[in-house]
Length: 253
Length: 306
View 1 (cartoon, rainbow over the protein chains, first blue to last red):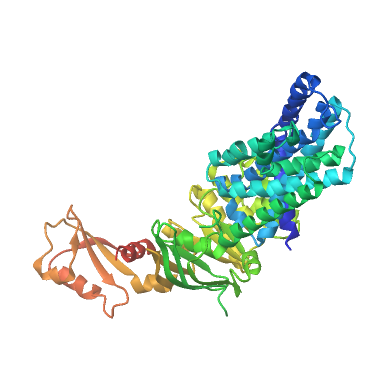
View 2 (view 1 turned 120 degrees about the vertical axis):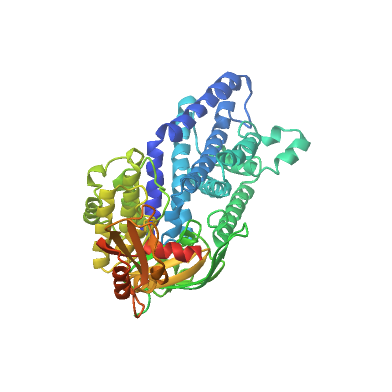
């Protein structure tokens, strides 16, 4: 294992975060605060409690997940896409490092960023609503697992994309709708039966549900199913990445 | 001694159907400077990219230091430093950070003293904290060389290293190359400046349309294909070459003041003695004469045109 190479990539990527602090950390925190103001305070005050917790409190896990999902994808896809775009990928490809090490460096850094971001947003949320976390260990596990999984997913998008438009396409057209419809702002149990069944096809529902359970012990689906679905998605991403490196898809001509 | 790089039966056909390399066999000896010459699109960069692991070969084998580039890629790649032709740099990194990054990427422990030496040798030391985006093209080129040297490669690929580098810095760069060679590093370079290959290389390979046309020691190549030209500056201008001198196939300059005679240096007889005798007989006198060896460039052009 070439740990020095992993560390070099990881540090390089983290340095990029600090350079782009506004974009990486400040802007997601600001937008989340806006959600709290709009949905939590303004609209939330007119909504009765959801499954025993106030609406403002209810949306906290969903909002954290929303940011973690989108930022994991954004960070990881940009992290690997940019060297491809400017050509510095030559050095990564010609270095004595394995695929696993490349992924560890890039995805590790992207996941680290989203976890830090998730925790910052959680702390921000604490300023608006009282927070109580029933299962902190589970909460952290879900956070880490989701960050890693969606950073892997972002890595795949970054390799697949051959233009900035494609880089934005999946997050904008697929991930954001799935997250909004996945119960960030409501419980899928509030939906009419037909829509409820359709909602259960949305993988993000399981992530948010599990994450919310670790806070309030309320969930749309059983927590075991949430864990299983997250792990399944992780496995799918890892398989695709294994295939990418095996075939050199979009990396090597 | 076993070659440091051995390429056998290497072919590359891109997805577009374009065959860039066609059954290449090539051995690079340890410690030599090998110049790879060829016109644009001949396959130079593809060949280098396959050896370095950036492009997948369609068929064939490559070993670096005895390590197969696929089966034992870690050992093979650890030996190689690559300076690609295009200027690919991270705009917002500092020179120091990007060079240190390369060393880490190749799994080497930190060595600030070495990086300091490399940057000083390449006249980059005063720019070590500068962001790369602020550097000139020639400086970026040297940053890329510094990155390749940062992990102490045993084999260095320089793909068009002096493109966009001014004359003085180019000399400095070649000093670095000579120093590396003295330290036992094998250097493979491609260049468009044939005089550089002529000056630097031990051996020259010519690649054209994806095939190795020729590999030869530079001196032998020059000798083998080298022709010389004897130029005579006449005392009085003449209008035409006299009939008696026809067998020599002399070329008369347009102004009528200069005669040129091409001859083969490896021929048993160059014909110079009899030519001079016949000139005297024909009453043609000259004030000066010079001979010129054909350059590698002439050889190259004649090979590629074939």
